[in-house]
Amino acid sequence: MSCLLGIKTHTALSMIVEVGDFERFEKAPKFASFLGLVPSEDSSDTRVNRYSITKAGNSHLRKLLVEVAQSYTRGNVGHKSVALKQRQKGNPPEVIAYADKANERLRRRFYKMTLNKGVSRDVAATAIARELACFIWGMMTEAGKVSVRGKAMAKKFVRYKEGSDLYSIGMTKFQALAKEAGAVYKIDGMALVNCKVFEKFLETFREF
Image 1 (cartoon, one colour):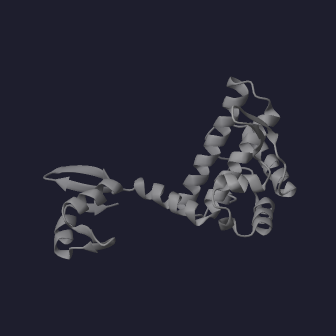
Image 2: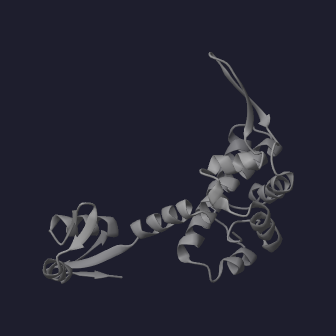
Image 3: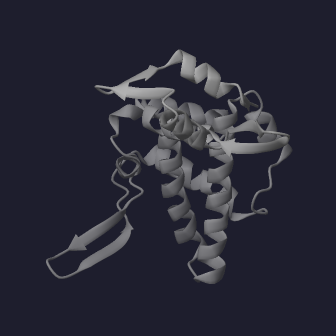
């Protein structure tokens, strides 16, 4: 969690201790609702009116995230301070990539809201806190971890040769070709491998 901008040891520990099991929230918006960071609503059959956040949740964590959101109100998009790099050091690459994506998106969104749309800084910071809560949920739950691993896997490449020419292919495409070649197939939902076909298929591929 400390891979995210503005979240240090105290904030991370507070989140973990007070939330406990993040898995008890089925989706990210439900976690944001638990923190009282979702807008209140007055709806009828013909109209939907949304107002300020409900504040009907854990006030301590809500205040912490709103304070953390202030870190996204300054600095250049994509910039990583020495302190942030140090906090990220030693974490899995996919977690760092997930945090970097969140940091860039939230900082860019804040500038877009305040500079392009004329939204006040306080309202924009609260919106950033709400989305940050969703990113935290994704980082701390198994559903989020699966998503992170899936995206990281999609970025891997397989290098292969055809004659003297060297090519690169995405891991997802590689897996699809293996299936088409009959090297990998499914029976009753179970993945099976034809070892002879697969070994021959792999002769021209080398993952890096």
